[in-house]
Image (cartoon, rainbow, N blue to C red):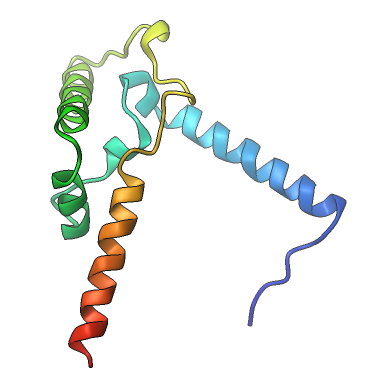
Length: 117
């Protein structure tokens, strides 16, 4: 049974609250203070689709991802964060891996469908 979402002013209120809660959660999660982007948090060791998506990244984007992760690990080991001027802003936090990951997951799903024929 599908949940019916409210329509009208309640819907926009709910959407605004959800957006505010989402922004608060991202801001307080701490990864932006280390210079990471949201897609840097995907771990390739636990998901083959993520590993394949990372493999398909353009070389420059993959190098920048590794640099951000290494810098974050170094800062974490030193119990420090970047100066606030170097924190990742919401405008900089572009989803660079998610579109590729969605494509890989669709390909995996299609392969399974072909095997089941």
